[in-house]
Image 1 (cartoon, one colour):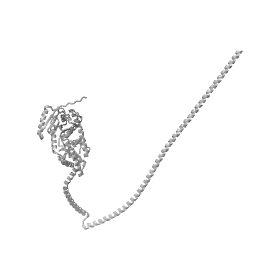
Image 2 (tube, one colour):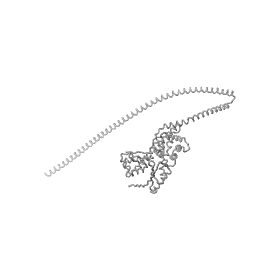
Image 3 (cartoon, rainbow, N blue to C red):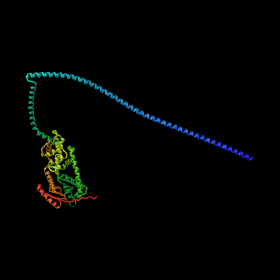
Image 4 (cartoon, helix red, strand yellow):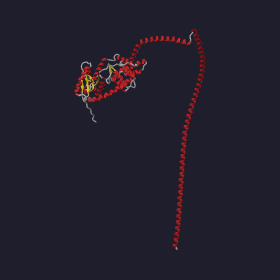
Length: 520
């Protein structure tokens, strides 16, 4: 019994424990749900507050942007209003100016109307007076016709015939009078024109020399110029065609040649060799070749400077080069380029006095002696050579004719040829302009070189030692040693037969073979 009660009580206690545990579990679950709901509500409230904060921030930013835009628009509107106001003021000012001008035009129109009315009234009065005068003259003519007994046509013919005879007599007398006066004054006037042109042209007269000097730093350089057994000086003289005189004169070496171009090339080459210090045959050939190229550039520069000085443009490059070469050509010791410039200036001045084309006259005078720069390359005298060159390079008929006829070799067809001939005579006959002795000497040397170059196989010929020696370089491939000996004798006989010269002339024929190869 007692065990049964204990069991019953244990069961009841267990049931009560289960019930209490279930109830506690329910309360715990409910508490968790309440806490979860509270947390959810807190999150929702926080989210709402944050959303409201973001919304307000965005609203404030939008308002600030709107205010900024409104401020910018207000500023732009203010500027536009100011500009419109300024334009309005300008328009008002222009309108007032136009009104003032319109008022002025109206006043002028009224004045013009009044003036035109006055002129019309005066014209009516003048027309009335002219008609009255014509009527009076007609009546007087009719009265004269009645008195003379002639009709109007006969009277006109008689009057015109008498007037014509009187005019012819007066005109003939005036023509005879003026013709006599012109004959008396024409020679004086021509002299005055030419003299004035010559006086206005101040050209330098220089005396040409046949030698140039080269300064050397010390006398030891003379030995280096001569070289071992004279090989350097022989190579230099053979390459340049000049005489190099090395004597006891301290600090100076003399370069001698009648050809100014050849002498200048030799002088410049010798200066370069002295400055360089390397003096031997190979270096001599290189320096001389380089100097020849520089001389060609220098000649072209001289031609361009002369063209600019005389005012002659659009000249062919070949003609410019030939004019530059005339700087190194002399005529009776007168520099031909200076002479050409002087003739061009004088011709232009005379043409101005006569009312002709001064520019064309200067061109004719400047180019008249261009044949002297190429007469050794072409057959004929320098007038014919110059005319051929000018025709070849597109010059006008007046310029060509002036070059061909300035020595009266052809019939004169253009007035510019006469002016060039007169200016050429003025330039050549001025005191101190020319010396005939030196010109004859140079011409003799040129003839000597030309005679030597005429033999077959001759490459170059140089007249040296003031014409007492001619050095002839032959082509070793065309002339052998025996033929070189025969050539020297034939050339000596030709000189004796064709030339006149003082003393004797030594003929030296040089034959050598030079072989050059480059190691690459």
